[in-house]
Image (cartoon, rainbow, N blue to C red; front, side, top):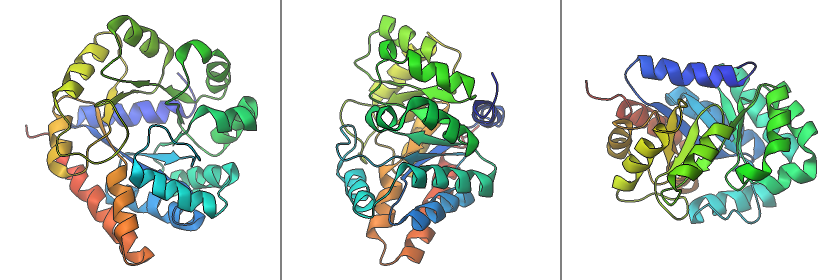
Length: 271
């Protein structure tokens, strides 16, 4: 393994060595503005996030619930471009030295050009991509270019994934595996549920890659619950909601920094 994905692997290994899960925060680029989104990414790193996923806003985000859809709409109305997403990655990584991934649907990359996107993401210091709607069997072109540029390819597995399908998905991925804790779209929920723990166990049976759990985690109690069985805890909607609910941008930055600190405490397992 080489290049930028190594930083991602090292970060997850360091968290494991500290007997805790890694905290992975998701924020869309261009929300509430491009500069504001960069400041938000820096704020969650300051608060204690280990890894940040920068969302590439999409007009039809099939996996995203209403909170992230609202933020994506704001970013798209503001005219966010792929260049702005890459700038967000560059500046968040440069300020923190920590791994930054892009989470995106396949269509924008396909239109932009796979070779161009992977080269520019690597040059910006990006650690890789999470590609929730790219089927593994159609991913050869992406993986060829990602590997060439030292980028991780993170695929999403779900509770509905059968064991043989899990093995196929995890064999093709790198960096970590994104385990969607339940069926449905992103959003905060009362409980993350037993299906996530079962999915992590089944996924681990197929791979040495770390398994990070997302969809539904919104507070320190849930983060602690998931950290007991997962290598990483992914939180998105809760951060975005703090930004949306804040009376102004400065208050939003304070709110996401504080939430990151609370969650960072939560992922430290009681020994």
